Length: 405
Ligand SMILES: O=P(O)(O)O[C@H]1O[C@H](CO)[C@@H](O)[C@H]1O
Ligand SMILES: [Mn+2]
Ligand SMILES: [Mn+2]
Image (cartoon, rainbow, N blue to C red; front, side, top):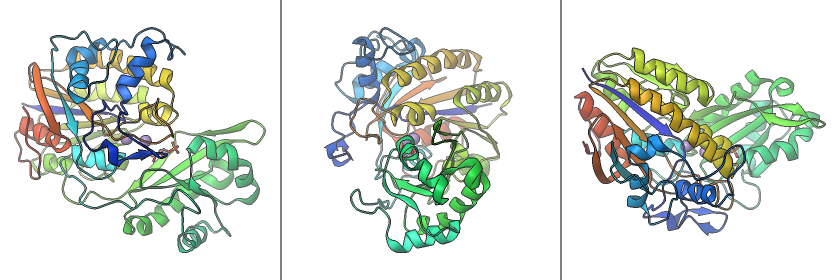
């Protein structure tokens, strides 16, 4: 009996989005952004040699068709990924139709439901949040005000405002090119539970404004030693607008196992069990799911560190190291798959570490399939991923997606 494993390599874009010109980082359109190709180019040119060296080495993913998918999506050279002439998996490139280039829209559309509305974004100049919203957040925090109130990189803003936060006790509120309201606060001085309660309290108002996520960003440290974010980040996302792949599987009697950020991204909708942790631990949970998942089940995993630790930080070496680690680990997991298993490896948006700014980039994403033979899938849509997984499990797939298998 069939089982399905859907694995999102968060932010591993492969360029070529038809509408990239409509999305921006700073004032530069995302035209030409290509997360994977630019990492591969940096590796080949010796610009990504911290903790690794040489051309980007991804034999497992390339063997499934990653290089072929990249060439289909865009014309950018990707040294090291140009020799997989006969991929052993099914491979293709997917475009997103939802507006925005953030995690929730990407995942919802991969799960079969494109986002039917335009998200709310905050202005880049002047105060990001209006007086009513500031007053609402401060009241919920029990403070006389907030810090930040601007677009920022999360690591930079705690370095800049961490000391003032400790002095005043005011939460640090910031946003990005995504539809997000982020609140950073000291985990022990402000309190982790208090921060999570604050995010939960203000989320309904922000969701009503069509702001996709409120994100708790706890950190530790001191002005003297510096400030560091902890793994206790938590996202409070809007609910998807319609039943998604996880609901379809449950409705058909299958179990749904979430791994990583999947629980936050879908507000636990349609998810029976959730395993969280750093990416290394998540890989262990994925291996365990391959061992134990039942017939008719869906395991849905997100590996976020490509994005959070390396893409947003514009760290080419780190992203390459993470990809090479993932490639070695996923090789073992692919070997453990059984007849009747389908594994789809894909991504939710780009985050080109060679690009200006610190935000996501609008790109196509790879779709690599193990367990369904070999050969091209062509150019597909994000929602086709959900339809294909549903088709493999033999269940109905409402919505716009069409199976590519
Ligand atoms: O700079 P940090 O806080 O990591 O923020 C990043 O993380 C957010 C959510 O993924 C994005 O919108 C981006 O701004
Ligand atoms: Mn993402
Ligand atoms: Mn991100």
